[in-house]
Length: 180
Image 1: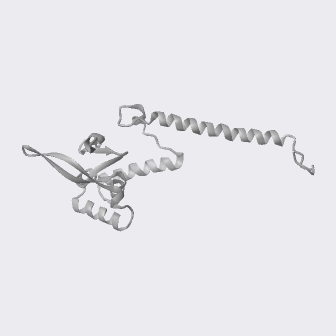
Image 2 (image 1 turned 30 degrees about the horizontal axis):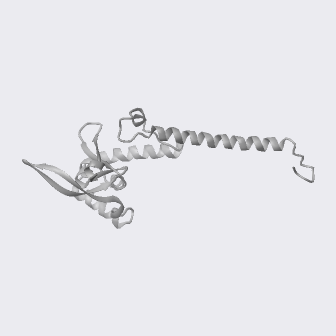
Image 3 (image 1 turned 90 degrees about the horizontal axis):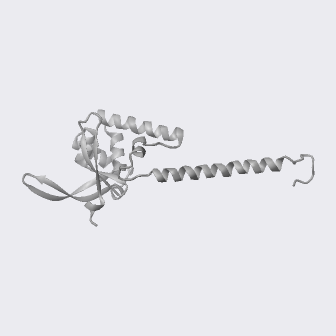
């Protein structure tokens, strides 16, 4: 099975409908070209290039972990041309989004911060729409149910331990020389 067959393509559309990207989804991450990142954050190629270079230079991320080449087919005039392009994964896209100063990047940071804050407060974040619509590329509803059941089982064990401690403490005599 070649790369194109293993990949799925999602369509991202901004709330205002001005930005529309065909996003490559492969190996449990999103992949965008530099041009797509420019479009996503409404920035310039020079600005995105500078931020990517700084991300690597500062050791925040490595090219080996975040950059991959994919063959793509594009229509150029009347002919289809196959090219190998560099794509960047979600980790790098997020890092760039935190560095760029644009209205769209600011909206991204607000969204990311809200979700991170929710995670810190609650210990979880749910994408309600994804859970309601199992026609997405991956349906994690069964995994979510399984994890909730594991947590509930863990709670039962915790309460059983408390019950055991209570049961042994009923006949505890602090004046006795020997404890049972």
